[in-house]
Figure (cartoon, rainbow, N blue to C red):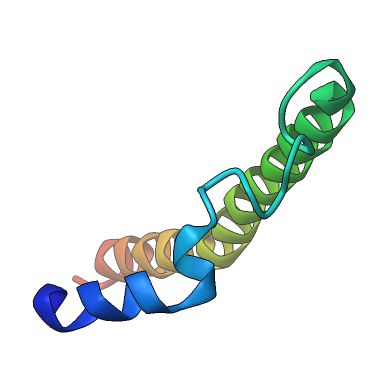
Length: 80
């Protein structure tokens, strides 16, 4: 597959663009500090959202499981 794509890279006009050519100086230099801070805030908010989603999805299941175990234990106590 790489052998087939190598000639296309040389012919295509995007093949000449370096990795930083598309964004230019947007992520480099002193002006990029606010960009990196916003990306950090975005990443942190996604991590918090995922953790809360997992917590709230498992929490009812653990309560129901604990209630079922408690009920089963109480039923065993009342039976002779």
